[in-house]
Image: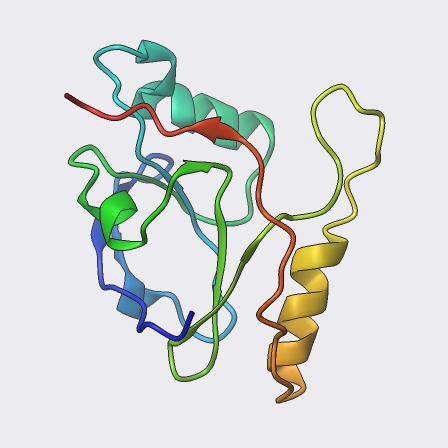
Length: 141
């Protein structure tokens, strides 16, 4: 906790534009895919674009082909939710909510939303956070 957000410049799979950390103004949301597309072709940017359009993502869906961004953020799984405060200091890494594929718990975003509200209200985000759960990032060898 407390480290500064690393900068990145990545390709937005939807638009073909590059997006960097400094482009994400105010409350900015991005999704980043860092999976190895050679071994997992379903994670290719073309497929990412189709998914983003199908689900109408209101945020950029970026591709980290080198996996350097994932390593800079110390990411380990997908999804891996990270929240930075107004000073770009890392304050939250946890779950979106208690929903999981197949557990019939509705998606509410309650955990991430609570942390975001704390940041917006100038409150300290508790260090104890519910661990994120997801698939491991498919790393290159």
